[in-house]
Length: 111
Image (cartoon, rainbow, N blue to C red):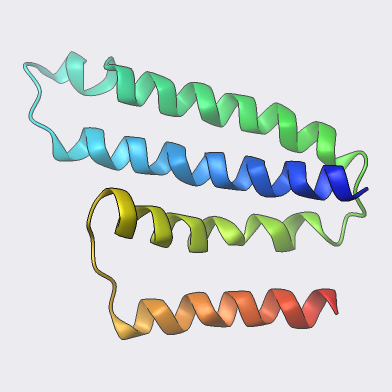
């Protein structure tokens, strides 16, 4: 079961990575409207999301249902960390407190 929980965490991390790719694409200027949707960042992000769908579906068959939604909330934490590292975005106190509350809620729920 530990492997499948790790698999859910990995899928959550990759889901956050796909969101970062979509944000990078949204920040860029494109030649035309079609290139806004048909560029490598957008296509890769959607391919990752599609793959995560299958990984989550498989992992949910092996993990107790109460852990899945809790692990999925880590997407918010991963997005904040990845946007800080990769996009050089800064977060405010409210965002930090919100993410700490998510982590605290997960710890309280699972303990």
